[in-house]
Image (cartoon, rainbow, N blue to C red; front, side):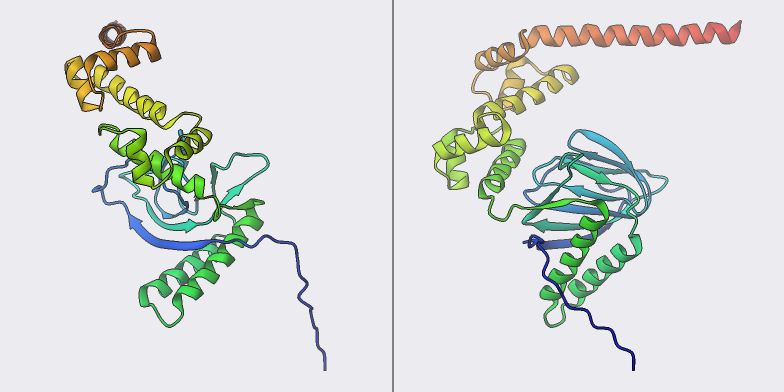
Length: 296
């Protein structure tokens, strides 16, 4: 009789401390508008079929079948499908863990994942468990998730980092999301503290450490970003724009805008109008030049 026996040796591997929040499947059918957003947790985005682009932390990547994107917590992202080849994908929401690489930032995209068969099998098993909810399915899904994450860590040589105890990161991420979505409201440090149930002085310190800006400075930066878009793309008055983005008065808006850009809102609008007219003129001249060349 032949027999082989292997002892299970303890290895120094950090417990993943991950928690599966959800799994979803989607197929683009032209009925969903791509809007940048962020979460306080990590997302795994796996392309089953189709082609498109993926916006991740200000960078645009082309994606296709078998691509796996790891979206870290609090990073703005969104996908854009090609109409000719609609994206179909599976997304996992995972709390308590993020990933780092010694050569890249935590915002990383992984293309053409080499162990695609194993990955898709595990994802399908999780989907099956969640769909039918048999006895102990949550425990099974959690174990399947751990296996999946270890496979990804091995294949891509990633370093897992637990964020389960990073309460500050989660709370600041929620504050950032709130400011991004509600910048037009009357927001103060006191109202933010009430929203988060945090001491306002701790909130100010934590958020500044998290973003590099105080909550109110971040809020004004967001408002100014929207105001520049409105000044360039609409004919709304300065007063209307100031009100629509949450400033208490036109004069305060103009003061903050000038301090940030070095010019008044009206001067900025005139400058952008001139630049736009100049660009249109150049475009027209180019088109006329091409037309003359065709005639000649």
